[in-house]
Structures are given as C-alpha cells and as structure tokens.
Image (tube, rainbow, N blue to C red):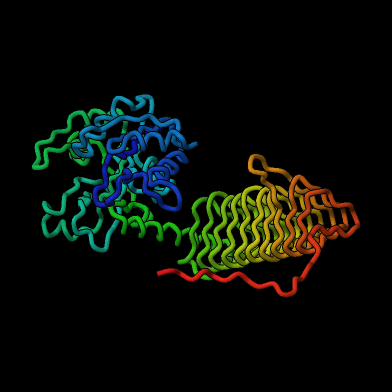
Length: 461
C-alpha cells in the first residue's frame, strides 16, 4: 500500500510520574508504541516516521530492536510546540510517492488495524479523513460539526455553543490525508493562539476553505481510541485489552473460569476443550493443545502443552515442551530446555532444566533434574538431584529406561545409569551404574552408646 504512517511519540507524560518515556510503558507485555507500530505495520505501509522528543534515544532504541519497528525513520521534536509543530518535523521524511499519510499517536495503544484500514480507504488520497467517536459525555472534547456527511469544523468545548455542546461526536486526533495537501497545510500552520502552539486540527479549516472534502469514520469502541496519560488509565486499558482477548478466546471455545482474571502478554493459541483457571499469566508464544487444563495462578512462557495435559496451580514454565496427558505441579518449575514426553509426571516442588523425560517418567516430589536425559518409565525419588555443575562447567546425566532412583540421592554428573537399574535411597553416585543392578553408595549405619549432644556455652556477663 502506498502509505506514509506518522506516529507522534515525543511527549514526556508528566502525569505518569515515571522516568520512562510515556510511550514505553507497557500493556500486555508490549510498549504502547509497539502496539501502535504493530497496527500500522499490518496495513502494509511503505514508510513509517516516528516523531520522538522526550527520552528520544530510549524510544528509538526500543523500535530499532523490534521486527516491525526496525525500518522506521525517526525525526525529533525539540522543543514540543504542539501537534502541528510535531507534524512539521515529519514533513521532510514523508515519501511524496505515497498518496496518503496516516497520523497516529504512540500513546493510543489499542487502535485497531481494521479501523485504520477504513480510515485510509475513506481518504483515498483525495479527502481529509478524521477518526471520530461518539461519547456519552463529550465534555472537554472537540465536537465534530457536520453539514450532511461532510465535516465542516472541529469546535473545541470551550468555544462551542450550547447546540454544539449537545453534539456527542468527537475527534480522536487520528487522521488520514492526501500527502501533498497535508504537507502544504502543515507548513502554513500558525501559532497565533494563547498557548503559542501549532495545532494539527487547524488543517480541517484549511481543507474546508479549499473545498477539499472532509469526511469522518467512526472508531469501533472508546477503548480503541483512548490515550494513556496516567497509571490509572494504563491499568484501565490493560484490563480492556485483556477482557477483549478473553472474550475472543471464549468465543473460540476456551473455558475461562473468570475472563476478568486472565493476562496474556504475547500470543496464546488454544485447541478445543481447553480450560484455564483464574490468575494465569501467558507470556511470549504459548500453545495449549486439545483438552489441556491449566490450574490457577500459573505463569507460562514460550511453551507448548500437549493434548490432555494437566497443569496444577502455581506452576511456572519457561521455554518448555509438555507432552500429551502429562501431569505437572502444583508448585512445579520447568525451565528452558525442559522437554517432557507423554504421560510424564512432575510433582510439587520439582524443578526441571535442560532435560528430556521420556514417556511415563515420574518425578513427583521435591527433586531437581538439570542437564539430564531420562528414559521411559523412570521413577525419580523425592529429594533426589542431579549435581550437574562442577563449579566451572555443566555435565549431563543419562538415565536409562525403567530406572528407579531412590529418595535423597545425589547423581554427580557426568554419569550414566543403565536400563532397569535401581539406585538405593540416600546414595551419592559418581560412577556409572550398570543396567539391571542395585547400586548403593552410602556409609555404614553406626550407633555410639554414651554419646552426648554438645551444649551451648553459657554467656558471661
């Protein structure tokens, strides 16, 4: 699409009461600005210009490191003298070959791509198109004054007549206009007002004076065009975003115990008959296969969970793979590289890191598996650990099929335990254990008659 996108992101955001630039505050794990860039990128725009100012280096670096924002061009507005002044800084960076220029705001994160698509289509490179919204209480907002379907003016609340104040249609600040005309109008803006600032809204009067049609498109919802100016507004939009996503999941068949208590900070895809209890957080890219059940208050990041798997409450997973019909938790932790086969059991207070467990393996209580390859049907006892780190390097433990590891064992890697082996409880194993045999490594139990426990030395005054 032959389209310029200009995103205003120069403001300080004083009411946020934060050292971070306003547009870098986050909703659903992504910056406000990143949400806007994502919506614009889906339009297929050929040039994106971001206007920075306060915290410019941080804002620019944040986009340079993202897939969709790394091709953006940056211009700086210093000092900040209004929206028209901001747009004036972007004028030299616009591609004249693009008939239409779309103006967005970096602190309006929930703007939808379909809404923008309609706005750009309404402009069609020939008309000035404004995005508007009808508010139940439009107090303080500029009113849209129409003549039939055409917009004749934007009247600020303080300047409106009683009849104009009864108008509920207001301007959101987002517009699309013919690039050549928009450039000319912006360069003609004046600051002869009480604030001595340049207002982009003044281009509406210029368009009307020249006979250029001014049309309006309606936003889908108030949340879509709401800006963030305070921590309270940030939290309100976070909940609006999450509730909309929860509704979409439920419409697709996901059972949510409470749609108001779900947080997705990335991408969550679900098969059929998936159930998610309250307070769960999904980060990065997470897939839940058919029939998966997620208990309350789990945190799951960049993980695939197989068909029919059950994850009990308070489980944490990061970059893991969970096989079909596996049972995980409660209070389990799967760290990066945990790859669990079908029907694996990982119980309470068990931690798995960079380890594979084959079908039917079980570690049900208070255990650690790090840098391990675990065979099928292994029973890994309570309190047992792989000692995988020697202080400088990590080493691997290989456990064969049908092995039984007793409770409170220490497996000192590098180590191999053969198929069908049994390791006696309380053993510290630092040599390979042969297949099919019992291996025990612990000192002989001894009792000492007459032994007395040491006593504390009395304190002297």
